[in-house]
Length: 63
Image (cartoon, rainbow, N blue to C red; front, side):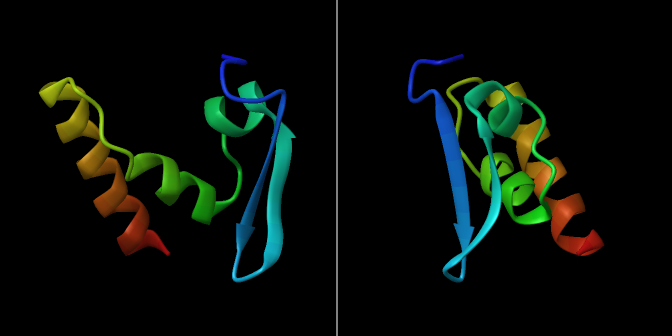
């Protein structure tokens, strides 16, 4: 999945919260902010979008 970049860094309130290869960060995010950020992205498939919205709801209530 190296379409966008070889490495990705995620900042939250100006602080580095996660860094790694695109496969690491996009495929298995460790930081809760990164997880919420990725779950909030829209996708064209309505079934997958519904699953993402549910995951985002779960992540918001857990944190």
